[in-house]
Amino acid sequence: MSFTPDEIERYARHLVLPEVGGPGQQRLKAARVLVIGAGGLGSPVIQYLAAAGIGTIGVVDDDVVSLSNLQRQVLHDETSIGTAKAASAAAAVARLNPHVAVEIHPVRLAVDNADALIEAFDIVVDGSDNFETRFLVADRAAALRRPVVTAAVGRFDGSLTVLKPFEETDGRPNPGYRDLFPKPPPEGLVPSCAEAGILGAVVGILGTLQTAEVLKLVLGIGEPLVGRLLLVDVLLMRFETISYRRRS
Image (cartoon, rainbow, N blue to C red):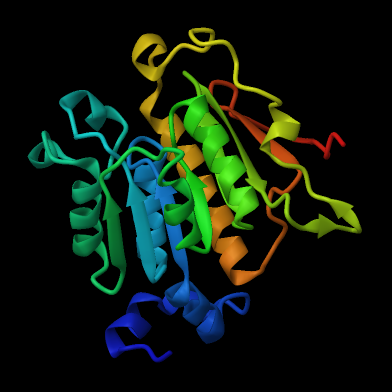
């Protein structure tokens, strides 16, 4: 897989990193990453994946851009209001990096389409805003042996982990999402973003951290957050990591 002169200049700061270099940048270019949600978390994820040179980004989102999104969903702008978020995301990527292909899926991820969508990609990024989708993504990706980088955010905080329950670490099976959260909370227990509010920068922090985990997985560097949950408190600017294991 060769690079054009434009790509060589574009990715110059990657190419000088021993952990990336030419072979690593080729892996990024060959990678296919599916992003569930083009909202608060999906916005920085899609932007930084595109900037890094991920070859193909899939975007799943059935919503349209509204004015209230723009406080935190930095992928979109006022000209995108009323446009499908998936289409707006593709337009933003085209402006940022024409070497990246975007496959848009302006649908809601559901039982009847999850397998076909997930199976077509190497890695899944869960930027959804509801437990039903998070559990569906985690369950189906585990069955299809696809790693998931999943995050959740609150008013001033967030959490992040990497799911690879189909593999082992040091001879022990990795935990899955249900080892961390056995079942969804009762409906209405956790307020939505619209109900509770959110500091816009929180999704930027967590979304950028999600992207870093994706790049580590593609490049095979560092220690992904497998079996570890990163907790971020923006008010105190405190980062903590807790370990969790397979329940059975």
